Length: 346
Image (tube, rainbow, N blue to C red; front, side, top):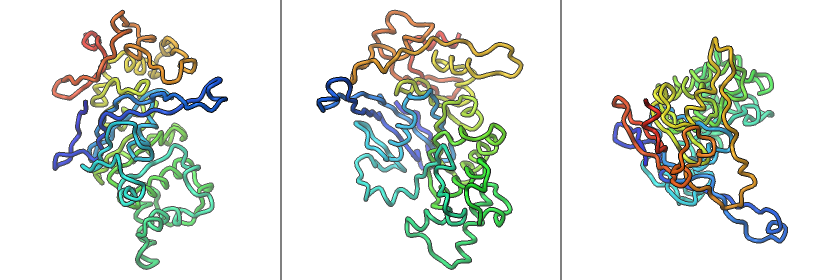
């Protein structure tokens, strides 16, 4: 089930259709003897669209499958089933050679800007490197310098002359992330996948980076898949939020609607855990998650994946796995995977 954010010609920049993914795991005696590992599914029929000029935040706790989804979206991995459609073209079965021309139009922003930037290169060299890799480094030295100048100015590093000849270690964390964003924009992509792009930054500079992403998606018509575990970060920049739990999207809708009126118990617990100004008490205690590390590889729990933690759980929840079903919220499309979703709105 998808809820499409479309382009002017009717298509999203990125469409993930029923993606599933699993990884092998050797444990115990089977691992020692080298037997074939059993597969453990980490994604279950994930469907999500990202339109041009839109930021879609994929939110969930560690281990929920967010980064795996991002890697599949960029075709850094091949899904076990489902499709990845980029700009209307099914790229699921393309080889690395066939994908290479598309790499210029899909770029990633990594979590740690210091790790993603070459410490031996100056900023100008870092920005020109993508063009060199893809055979687009043409023109005179003056032309290349002008491109670097425009790129730095577009991400708020002004005056550009102040930053061109610096090394990454000479920049602050926020400045390094702006350089990383500028580098990803050099090839004029249509899609950005930002994996926890502000989690390594000081709180004081996060707002500036998030504001920059909002500006860029509006000015350049970029589609942005924003990966985060922080709901407060997501709502400050995203147009829509998709909440992921144990490899499934359990709620999807406009960012402020999802935060203001969550319809899945897991989303409600995430919202309740966000610290609020003026609150003297800490966040409510959420029931601890089951220790899935002790489960047999390949074993999938029956029923709703959130049943063990849900305060609204009933016996049918333990045997019936809910699907993501579309609903309507004052004209805004919403979707939720919970048999008791209607009670959450009362």
